[in-house]
Image 1 (cartoon, rainbow over the protein chains, first blue to last red):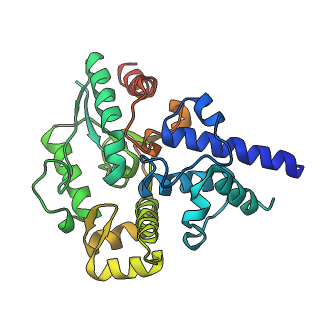
Image 2: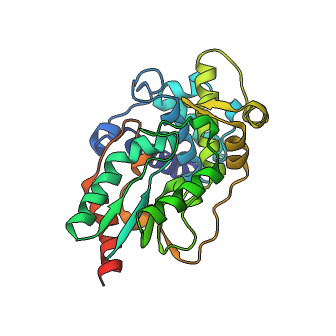
Length: 91
Length: 199
C-alpha cells in the first residue's frame, strides 16, 4: 500500500467511526476539516464516548493506543486525531 | 409458548441500548413472543447497592429471573453474555467480555481525570479497585466486581448463538455519544429471534 492510500484509508475509517459515535449523517462528517474541533468542542463527545471511539479505532485499524499517548491536543481537532492515528499505523 | 429473558447491556452501554432493547421487545411482542427485561440488582430501579454486586451475584440473579419468568430462551446483550444462564437456549448479541467492559470504563476514567489535570493509569486503578472498589464513569463498583470483571473472558456456550453486529447492519448503538435509535437494527435483531423461534 502506498502511504497516500494508507492515509486516505485511515481518513475514511476515522470518519466512519466518528459518524458511528456522533450519529451524524455522512455529509456532516465528510465536511470535517483538519481544524474541526472534537473533544471539548462537541458537548456530546464526553470521556465515555471518546473511550469508545478510541477502542473502535483500535479494533478497526488493528492498532493499540496507550492511555498515556492520549492527550487533549491529540483529541482537540480532527486533523490532530488523524495525524496521530496515521502515525500509529506506521505512516 | 416462547418466553425470552432479555438481559440488558451493562453500565453506560445499558443507557445507550435501552431504547433499542425495548424496541426489540416490542417487535417480539408483535410476533407473539413474550419477553421480560429485569433490572440487574443495583441498576435502574433496583434499590440494591451497586457497590455490593459482583459478576457472580448478577449471574445468580439472571438464573433466578429465568426461573421466576419461566423463560424458555435468553437474549443477552453485550456484557450480559457473561451471565446468561447456561442451560437456556438463545442468543448473545454483540457479546462483550467483562475484561473488555472494564477496559472501556477505565479508559473513560483515565481520560476524564486527564481532562481535570490528574494523571491516572489503568494498572494502578485496577490495583486500587481490587482493594477498595472504584468509581468508573459514574458507577461505584465494589472490589469483588472489579476483580471479577478484570479476569472475565467470555464464557463458552453450548446452547446460545452469538449474533455479531455485522449480522444486524449499521454501527452498534452502544458507540453513540448520545443514546440513539435505529429502527432497522431493532427490526433485524427481532427478526433473527422470531425466525428461529417460529420456524
